[in-house]
View (cartoon, helix red, strand yellow):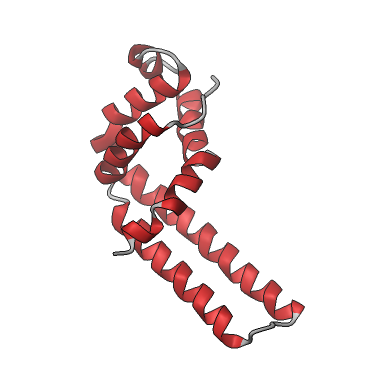
Length: 135
């Protein structure tokens, strides 16, 4: 099943979903860690050597991968609370009905959820609200 790109109107169901999945606080903590790591890297030197820059990039990548793993764990642990919202959002993104989403085989349904969380637009949205969430 193909998913369309996220649009501005998807903001509301996405925020509702984040709240129900219990990941808002995780997002806040992640952006704080990311800002701290960036600040730490900047404080080391004004013009870091290539090896240090690579190390800092690797640390940021590790931070991101750890975060995604934690995010998925918490989201999956709370998925029952957001199930109806997830089904409505997936139906909207796939141009189908909630009933069709509910009747998908488990592997296809799981793939849709994973693909949703991997959407570049979602990552961009999360980055754009990071300053708001870190307050």
